[in-house]
Length: 348
Image (cartoon, rainbow, N blue to C red; front, side, top):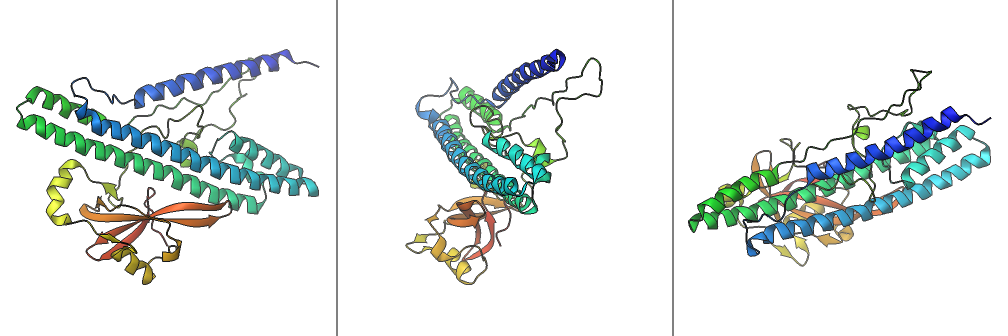
């Protein structure tokens, strides 16, 4: 028998969800928006901001590619597992895998309760998927943060030139603009939707409310077509004492003597990194695996300035082979530590 009340509640939930999503996304866009065309700067003075936008766009494109590839591989692996469960008649596991496949195909990367009904080897696969998602997201945040720092350094140089040329009003405007430009976004997340039935006050449509203490739930889902709130702006807050971060323009000036000249790269790579790998100070990276040697960059780590350099190399997972970027923290002619770029975790 057709239940009009249930149908009415489902329709209401759908439209309120759509409205809430639209409002939430647009609110996030407004909060995170940056004015990259301040009218008090000339065309030539806008170059640092133009380069910033180019970097952010390139980082976003790369991030979307990484996530799409990872989701495709994971979804294919889940499909194989689902076929096995159907073959042996494991109804609960089949339903769990169906739910997980639907989420991944919708680009929802959050961990769901459905996965608890899947076989143990699928849970292990999900754990590795979560680790890759975290690494990819952190890499994007790190590169966005670096783009912001580089833009601010360029603006700081322009501010100094304006001050020296006695254009004090414009210099003051630029200083105020830089403060706003570097300020981290304050994302607003829509609350979980709860629709209460007129006859049943305990009825909730959203069976999986967001738990603020659970980082897997507080991170918004990735969806390249709808929600880019987690990836549109660099997240610069949260740098701990142990985090490797870009240097500000003020720090560059302060520590330029301590930093000294950047490490030089030969045809074989950076000598400090090559020696470290040959001494097996890092096990995951071998010289034969390295696909790309990145530029040397000045960084702050534990309150001190260091040069760092990156290498790109492939790592193999249950989902195939993915490029990973590792960063070496250099002191003189030695590598102090190897870290994953972005997440900052130590490379084994």
